[in-house]
Each structure stands twice: as C-alpha cells, then as structure tokens.
Image (cartoon, rainbow, N blue to C red):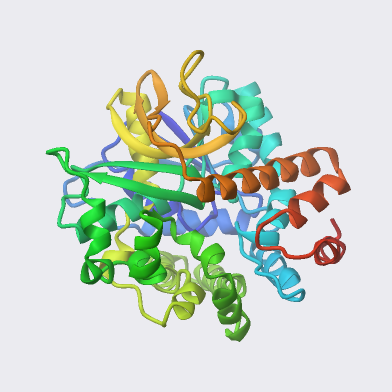
Length: 444
C-alpha cells in the first residue's frame, strides 16, 4: 500500500513514519514545494532508530511534482503550510497591531491563513480526484475545519480532517478520572478547535465526568483543568478543547501574547530555520537535531495560554496526548484493514448517509463538524449524540461556521466582501473597522 505525505518536509513526518513500522504501507512518498526541506526530512528518516521488534519500515521516495506524488496513492496525508512559517508570523503580527489575537487557526490570523490555503487545498483535491480517485485524503492542514470543508466540495466523504487536541483531551481526562483511556466512551462535538467533551463513560456505563468536575485536585492534574480552572469547568459542566481558552479568556491571553518576547509563529520560524540549516549541513545528525527540536516545540506549545492561566509547565501527562501520527494510523488501519475504531474526526454533518440524522441539525448538511465517529472498512459514520449542544455552545459554533464558510467563499471567488465578513464576524474581532485594516495590511 502506498502513502503520500504532501508537505513532506513538515515537522511531523518522522512521527508518522515511525508509526508505520510493521504496517501494510510499503512505500512512503514525500512531496514538498521546497526540495531542501524534503531532502532534510529524508535524512531524518534515514537516521530514525529501527524498531526493536524488527518490524519493517516502508521505503521512502521523494517525488518531484504534485502529480507524481499523488498518482496511484492509496492514502494521501495533506500537511501543507502555504506561505511557510513566515506567513504564520504575518498572520499573528497583523492582528496584534490592531489589538486583536492572531493565531494560526483562531481569530483574524486563522482567517488570513485560511484565505491563503483554501485555493491550494482545492487544487490538491482536484489532482487527487483525477489521479487517485480511490484514495482517502487525511487532512492535517490548518485551519483544519475550513480546509477539510473546502476539499470535501471536490472529494466528498473521501476527505477526513484530523486533529490530536480532542483525543489528547479524552486521554488526559480519563487518566485524571482514574480510568484507562483505551476503555472509556465519550461524547465530544463541535468544530475543529471549538469542541466540548460532554461525557466520559466507564466500561460499566457510569459517566465519570461529573465526578471529575467535582474533584478540584483531579482537575489540577492535567492540562485543560489547569488552563480553564475548576470554577469555570464546573459552571460549564463540560471540558472544552484547549483552544477555547482564546475565547473564554481572551483578555488574559491577548495580554500574555503582547507581553511575550515573540509570538509562537516567530519562535517556530526561527527554530525551524535553524533546524533545517543545521540538518542540511550535517545530514548524519539530522535525526538527533530533529528530536531535540521536536521536544522543545512540544514543551512550549500554547505557552501564552499557560502564562495567562498562572504560568506552569507541561508535564509528561500533558505531552502524551495521542498525537497526529497515532490518530492518522488508527484511521488508516480502520479503513484499510477493516479494524473498527472510535475516533474524533472532522467530517461532513451528513456523513451518516441519506436518512441519517445530522450531527448538528442547526448546520447545513455539507458543513464539516468535529465529532466522535465509528470507522471501519466501509467508511466513517458519526455517532450522533441524543444530547443537543447548549445554546451558548451552539451560538459559538454557528458564528464560527459562518466565518469558515465566508473564508472559503472569499478564497475561491476572490470576494472582498466575503473576506470582510469572515474577519469581522469572528468572535475575537471586535470592530469592522479593525477587520478592514487587517485585510488591507495583509493585502487580501
């Protein structure tokens, strides 16, 4: 079986490659618009320690073009970054100049990133539809909900978006509740980076979430509990995705970002530039350099939000969340080997098929949502919860979905009015005039 990674010079590639040990994948094809990055990543993979159990790793091929990369692929992982890390730096700095949060997937910064990325994602979807019509596309590219919805307009149900934030939340919450993360059931629903864990079910059917919310010490033992605080979590009656910290604590997070020496994007831009330069000069050390850089990247994740919630360091429990690589591999194995799995995925609201209930009835059928899904060889089926979203959560979902769909419309049709709606209607943007200035500064 052949797996292609678009954005093959991306930082998560070695994690995916390591997870493929002993799998049915015999060929991994990398493609990146920057040949230097793809070459460095090839050196990292060459230096990756081989599995102790002797499980084979797939051969690696570096493709010279998009068409070469996707032709005949069984699975395509799309992990691109249009504009590179320099684009991310601009997405952060432009809103900050207006006193607005600018983040890769959240606020005006997320809209700017989506405007750049959607046309490229559509082009990829069209080439996959032409050259590998039976392939499954697994989208890692942020903003994942927006990009997956855009690609689904071409690929339908054969594109699935993934994110490791929800599975990390489930696993951390289960451990804090004293349960085995591999045995619990869960109810999670929303949009990408805007979802809520609303139940956590033990094998005997007990909902563990109320007890966890009542236990202040347990809440203080994991990342989301410390981010949001016991008082707010009990008021919500649910555990929010970590990215909701930008919404619930906007003022504090903005102040932390403004006080930081540099933005997250600027940190990653410098870090990755250093890594790729060093690894290019010393290919024999590429893996060691990558591992050092990866650990630093994980330890500093969402540093501004942690600073805004009192300042604390991530521990091993926080770092061990499940990871993109594990989610992607579980999804791929479920589809290719007919190994049933329960995963939180980004799929169309109507992914259950004709006649099946919508995941979120207030949204259009073709809107992409993030929810619990059953996956096997026949495809992906959302597990529709009988408990509707509360009005506060649904209000946020409706507003953010309007932003996502306006972003897609603006990107596809070069529609300035749609772009203005996308930025100005975002809950983290408090002024139409500021939204107009953001777009002008971005040249959008």
